[in-house]
Length: 434
Image (cartoon, rainbow, N blue to C red; front, top):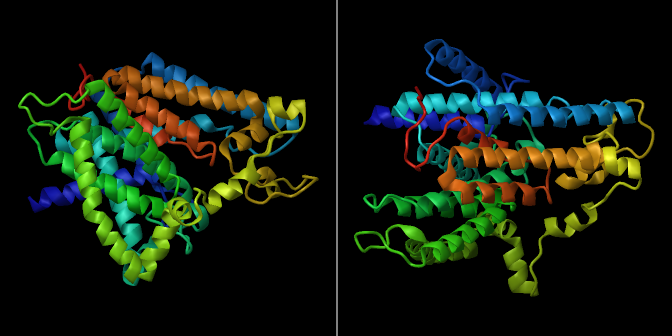
């Protein structure tokens, strides 16, 4: 039993290597996503030799063509504008690396569990986020734990170690917010669709939801997008089911049962955090940061955060027709170009980190639409593979599109595992196909 638990924990670590990649201090230049991609390539070769997988699907080919189009538009913008910023020119390579890393995770799950199901994949991703958020919060109180993590975790700032924000192992400010938002929605979906014979399972999902919700917001306030979308999912399920109960007459499943459990958890943890808020400075500071908008609403009468206030000044747009169409060819810092003449922008071109604005300045409306089309098709690809989960994938797509109003990060790593196998039921194993 202990051995199996250790194996599950190790598999969770490998899933985290994929979902929250990072570099080790002793292996600079190579992140864990690349390591997992190499493992995925090995699994692919092995499976091709043993003919345990079907040939490449038409949807996968089209998805790769769309990624190539993004790269071509990037190249055109670079050549037209005479810039060396190739951030998206090799987007197809990035997609392949993410895909291969996801493929490695699925093969590992199959080796350990003997099957790959929709729920299993989600369970490991949820476990990763629970572990990352709990670790990030615990590091505030256990200096030895923080010292241990810092000893092997490379990278600083918004993508790594940040003394001003909570961070996990690869789960830093920029990468974590939208991913936590998606995982909150996944968690809510699984809680609603828990099997009736496992009456304890919804409680586990709701507890995981609460941990990611509270600690995730302390790490990145973008997590709140997932709270809104997951509650929207809950309302949609309430309307669709209209209070329908299980066959045995209980409401263990369904949105109404989850809502009751959610309220129960809230009633239990609220007094705990109120007490900690009033007695512990570290908890108080993290709560005020994570839920700054709610504190502002209570104390000032209107909802706002320092990020939302700064965001208003970040909405900048091209000033010429050419720039609107094909962009300026810059998305990163201008110091990469020794021939650049003009206002120097460190970090983000034009001083904006809003996704849509950065895309417009990089490769214009053409490139921006290509990026949107890529993710729309990616979501539809997932829907075709898992038709019963259509509403879930559409909401995850919505999270991605909303997220670009704040950052240029995306959630490709959430989608990709679900394009690599198909199922009609949440617990169906269809990994190995004849």
